Length: 426
Ligand code: ATP
Image (tube, rainbow, N blue to C red; front, side, top):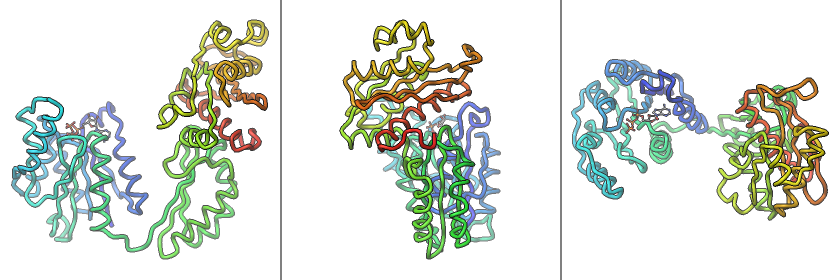
């Protein structure tokens, strides 16, 4: 099966909007066992869109386009496709009623131009838009005049991610599964790890997985900031069995380095563990500027476990809010093992939580020294049993520094909760 994705929008080519649809749609399809063969990005002018769609239909069973379904004059996709296919645009009164309702519910005024979104190329299937006014459109080309009369589908999706994603999951996935059933069974699983680099992860699992690779296992690695994903996939009648066996090997080899599956995040895992253990945490952040709190509060239900997050950026705030000793700062510096320890213990004492995490470091680009170069960070974790402090070197730009440091801090807590040696693999 040949699939092509066409992303439209001048803003994508100007670099003003990141083409997240490319990554997201390819990922959704890959997880179902469909691989996108080609992706094209074109500006939203008439000639480019028509040319790209015509070319793609000349090769493909399925073509997906994104963007240009809105009401403004630069949203041309619907009209251009109707023209290309030689199909008239017909007014769909139920879509129009839906658009009118949409504005009514929001007490807004419906511009006359919004009506264009109710125009449907003859014979197209309408894909409901739960979060906007422009429906998606799915057009069966049977025969496809650009592919020697074979059958193809052309699916048009809106640009805004909050509209496209639910529509894709609710309407496009069932359509693709029904119209292009998998000939061979497909199974895949992604295990997410933190604490080891990509090549070390590979070193631990590649050899024991080799016999399964011979039997059809596809093994992929994806390194992200502070994380490595191990993707296992297989096709055929034994796909599920191969994946189960591979997963068992990876889990046995990587053990506590694995923090979750598929789309899980480390903060979700940490919050879930705290909830399960009925424990609470406080944060005393300096160089991460609240980023650990930000990550934890992105998780629904975090309020049950995160009691307090203090951004104690200055020495005074460390002294006043956390009870760090002035002498320690003078003697060892604000970025030191001693101060990190005092910050965590102060947060634990004052916030009365089960755990407290503290971070203090030098994000750079200035402020480094020979003994404490840029990227130096101390991460402390305190609980009723005592305090551990880890020293790390994260010499990256400020944003990456914060991401990596927050990852290490959250992982320190996760490992403590697993009651394992907190230094394993770090
Ligand atoms: P609208 O009704 O908002 O005009 P539309 O279907 O016409 O929707 P576009 O105008 O092409 O879509 O895009 C709307 C917005 O959606 C863009 O400004 C951009 O923020 C976002 N967007 C479009 N394409 C992409 C993409 N490929 N990746 C990420 N975001 C995108």
